[in-house]
Amino acid sequence: MMDVIVVGGGPTGLMLAGELRLQGVRVAVLEKEGEPDGFSRARGLHARSIEIMDQRGLLDRFLALGEKFTVGGFFGGISASWPDLDTSHSYVLAVPQTVTERLLAERATELGAEIRRGSELVGLSQDGSGVTAELADGTRLRSRYLVGCDGGRSVVRGLLGVGFPGEPSKVETLLGEMRLTEDPATIAAVVAEVRGRQARFGADPNVDGKAGLYRVVVPAEGVSEDRTAAPTLDEFRRQLRAYAGTDFGAHSPGRLSRFGDATRLAEHYRVDRVLLAGDAAHIHPPTGGQGLNLGVQDAFNLGWKLAAQVNGWAPEGLLDSYHCERHAVAADVLDNTRAQMHLLSPEPGPRAVRRLLAELMEFPAVNRHVMGRVTAIDVRYDVGGDDELLGRRMRDVELGRGRLYELTREGRGLLLDRTGRLSVTGWSDRVDHVVDTGVQLDAPAVLLRPDGHVAWAGERQDDLLGPLTRWFGVPN
Image (cartoon, rainbow, N blue to C red; front, side):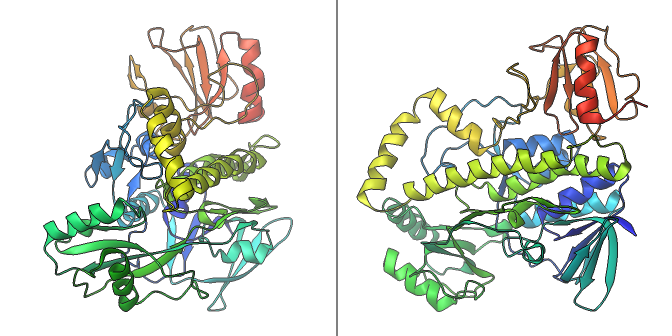
């Protein structure tokens, strides 16, 4: 029996596998596709995801293959200036999803995760000691826990019978890669003109560094009855002519797909020994580029908690806190993508709201607030207490022995102590203690969870003991 089966080898599943292996958990990733499809649905990492990669020592790999951007347009396409965010990584890192998946797969494999491609889950059952997974080829695998990271049409969620309430798609958009024969300058001019009246339109050149290949986005004629059926090149040409008066000479298509604006949120992220993460737990329009990021952040929250459960030191309620914390975050993302889809409508009412919001976002405080939500920098978990730091992620700070994020690479808790009077005796196998009297903090000391969120702030040892027990279990 292995410890955890992760179903789905996308960014969420691969990030989770790496987090589990960091804690010594035996994990296998089941991916039904035999090979990566080479299609990048998502194309960037927001600030909080960039911080996560930095916290785990992965950022240099991403920076080497990505490009930094500090331009507006990430909320409803409104071209406000880039705000001054409370992070050392105040930018968007443009990196194709294919690259993100490759780097996370390499990381998980380096740490000892097993990735089984061509393994399709068709059934599961669970009892008091574990989960049995049934594959399409008849193989049965046994694990202590199983996590469904298998996308919006999640087989795991369906087998569990977890409700997925929300709204169905009202509009649909075509997304595909193809070559265009029209002059690039003409394409750029036409796209700029059309986007003035239809924000769900675009043709971006040099996809994934491939000269001459365009990533084309155009509204569909309607909502397809069969959402699994890929659109045709003729459908793209027809819609391009409808909106731009030309199909740009589109030919030689690569991957063609469609997406809608459905918003749905799983009622439960956990059913006993089976959990959901990423698109298996929530779907929403891709406005703001939040989908991949939300899934990676789910995995970052879940990984250390599930590992603590497997390794036997999780305090009561720790694993359930995954649903409590991440379900609320996803609900907020669903709301802001609903708002963005409204702003993208060509109807007069939404366009008037868009103009008003564009004016408001010229105020720095409004701009920071909106982008703090999109980039997940402002996510705050309810950990109890009134201190403003509690529940927020700690930004990277300089220490006498390096940067804070350099000390979080092993995925352990961390007590950052300016007083030099505190102790983690009894928890030293789970929590590091760093004394630095010169560090700039808004508290004498802070206790960080393995995901970097502040669980306690103060200076008294007797006040620290409760949070240590709550988040890191009973002392040895």
